[in-house]
Image 1 (cartoon, each protein chain N blue to C red):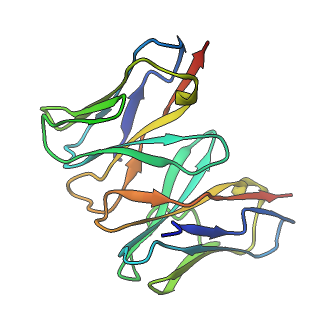
Image 2: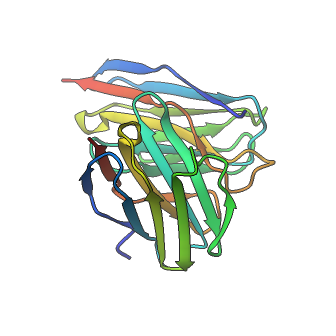
Length: 112
Length: 112
């Protein structure tokens, strides 16, 4: 079945460093979503991408919809302690509208 | 808007008992999703509704699981009988377009 491969699985970075993570799929996606989850909370939507090649920013976060439509990237610039959490990519395959699937997540740990 | 509201936040029950999880989606959202999150399997889509109609329930693990959406403002996920392996965090999410999903805070279920 459909699978989203997210990497890296975890990242340990120092405050002020930039963070990059990516997500790939075996199917073409029309939408890529990026979420962040804090402990004990539900995932929170950070960025939504709708067009191949699209580059969208939300504060220090920048995400890109890959040209092949099978991948997406998320960058966090100048990380701060509150960036700690699990970041998920998600999307519905083009042949399954509404069947929103999630990657396994990237755990980000920021040290002072 | 208050966001997606789930209840209870925590549930501890004995094996064999019936468990009912409740969800109130964001007003005006036509899509409702039920997810289960575990360390081993991540975020799994169990079922989703569009305009109160179940569209895809292929993620429902077994016949012990059932979900209903009697109206646009309420949904339930029922497990009967419950088993220890059902222990997980269950999330409800709603969406206006079937893609950007907004999550509740989840129900942490423990079956002993």
